[in-house]
Length: 90
Image 1 (cartoon, rainbow, N blue to C red):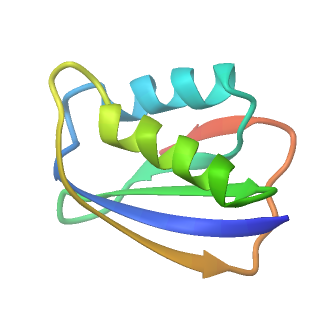
Image 2: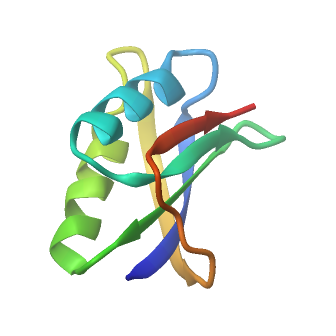
């Protein structure tokens, strides 16, 4: 398993972005979390088996909610491992 941190910038707070990502990621069986950051960005972290699953997760982040608009997603590997579902952290 490889874990990734994604920082999403754009219109992603106050537009049901976290709830939409949570719903889609949970349905797709991902393990990790999504949370708002100070300054208007969102952090999403996930553990995946391969690059194809990471690309699927990034597609979910790009889709967001009908009210959101993603300008940029920065991704880096992290040492944390996530299991037991996908959560919204506040």
